[in-house]
Image (cartoon, rainbow, N blue to C red; front, side, top):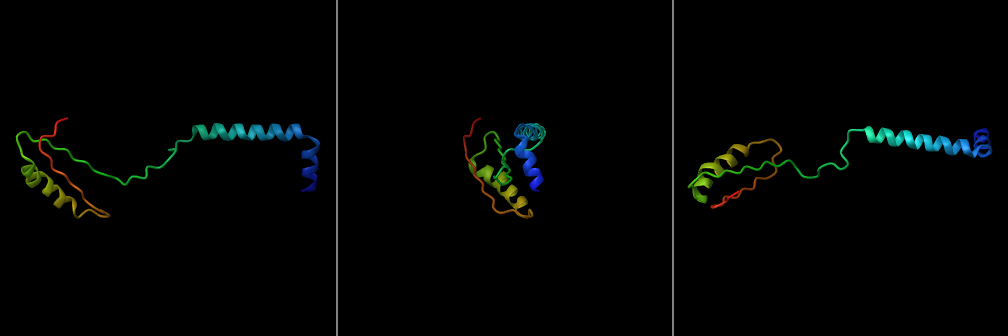
Length: 91
């Protein structure tokens, strides 16, 4: 090990050149990696928007929202269901 340290101290230009080369190869490999910078911390979510013409919020609740909630209630690993029925929504 002492031999390696002596050689490195005797030729600092070679050590710097190897370090820069290693850094360059590392940056090149990093730029070619197919990764996301940050994982998405939000749990998977399903959003359903229905706009039946002429229906009130109560009708949408009765014929759309409640059947969807009942159908989704048995899903594995489901933590919670939240729904909202509004009248007069426009896109």
